Image 1 (cartoon, helix red, strand yellow):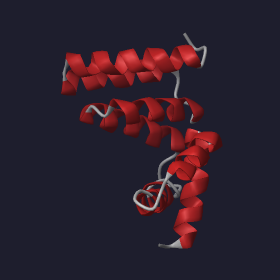
Image 2: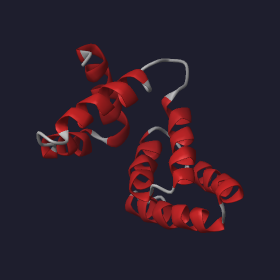
Image 3: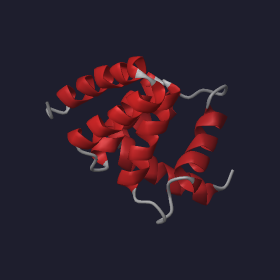
Image 4: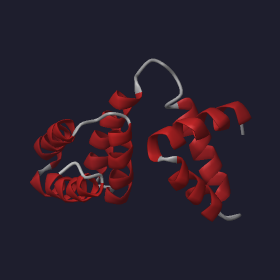
Length: 126
């Protein structure tokens, strides 16, 4: 594994998802899951997020759209929190969910609204 990509990815991951979440996630990794956690941190967060071509807010908005389209709601919840950390507003989250509804269907947008409401209430933004 490229240590530079891992370190850059670790910093990006913590900045978006929060240091406590990331550290707990990595600490919970065992011999079975640790190699994936390390590779994902280097590849997704180091290679994918650690350049200046697209700002973190835009990347978060892209992630919400893609993860919402895939219907991976646990990850969508985590990235909804991260998107707020990266400056995505409640109104922008709503607009992203509207697009998910248009392209992926009403049931999926309803799931996204349900999870977004939970996150926004936790963040005291509703």
